[in-house]
Length: 212
Image 1 (cartoon, helix red, strand yellow):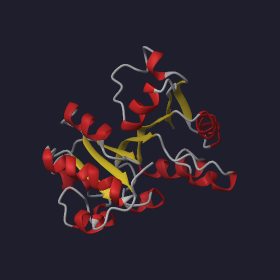
Image 2: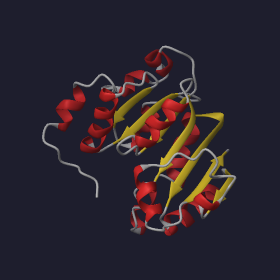
Image 3: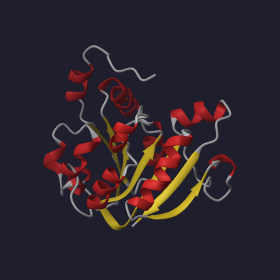
Image 4: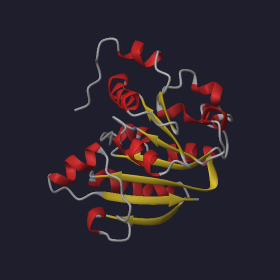
């Protein structure tokens, strides 16, 4: 279970240089934040940041923005950056529903969704990060060749996501229901904290890649 209540976490985040305090002001100007014209990849629901920071180390010519709405979880990622700074990483504390207020049209090259909240009740379906409502948001900020990559161990959420890709009129470029035994899709795979935990329990990891 995620920790959500570390006393003073919001104050510590507000004082951290790795966290963008007023992200709406950067809309259309993210290359100025990083000081270069490298592609921008974002992870929505970055957790403690293991996935994103690992990618950033491997790909110094790509800029990464991690989005997390829980202060206490985000703080863990910021603490890691303090210990091992990466100039091509920034974090934002925000709710993903307002993502179009933070990134401009064609500003993002790739979106990662990893082990997202399944919101299991039907009335909350539109809150799922792979709902058609969210795909409409991604359509506004992604470059024409941009893609969404989604991983989960939740079978019901994955089945829902496959259907939503179709309902959103996106293309399902590839998918697997057992990522770690799929030689093609597992090539170069970077595991999240949840992925390590779930796979060690024997849970198969599902992944899809979608584009317009």
